[in-house]
Length: 262
Image (cartoon, rainbow, N blue to C red):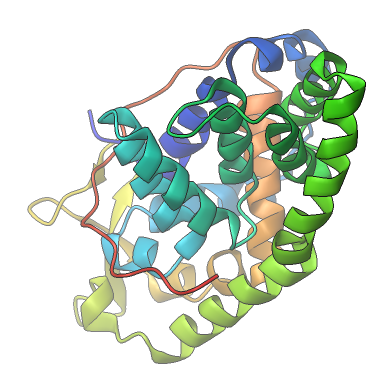
């Protein structure tokens, strides 16, 4: 059964973390954040709205992460690494963690444990418990020489992918999309609604559900700071708080245009 694309993407990346992430499951579950009704509604709306193909494409963090997971699932690990890098450039912490996992295991690239640590360190900067656990595990496995190299590489990565820079880049994209994307390209049906999806059924042009324009224009979808907070909440509720991770089917999306320079 198709599902809203955002949750399966999060769970799929969490599943990629494998062994080191599992070490923190018990501690993570005990620290589950509480959601009020407003947060729960906003999170559900976000998960449903990004299942609309036109909306997904206007969120480059999710769009490139989705394409990366498609490539990873089809066995093209080198392409997946490149696409995760694009997503990482828009402040996507799961994609930064996926890069760490690929470098650590030598998937789509040569094994590079110092670089893997540097990416996981950046991925963990917003406090995701499983990523913090993975970061500490990686560090414990590095030799003194690798640790010194990891710190050097980390400075290079931070210069181009720090949270301030990547959030600003994401903010510019979302602001532009909110101002310029027309309703017909996103699924507006002419009566103040948008053809949408539900988390259980996914998007289908043959059997669409609808979302109001208030959902489409909500800060949860287009305000970069609020959007980032909801993504944080989603990871902590859907991943960190769970004793195990179940990966759902990923929805295929059309190939991306040539990615912008990073």
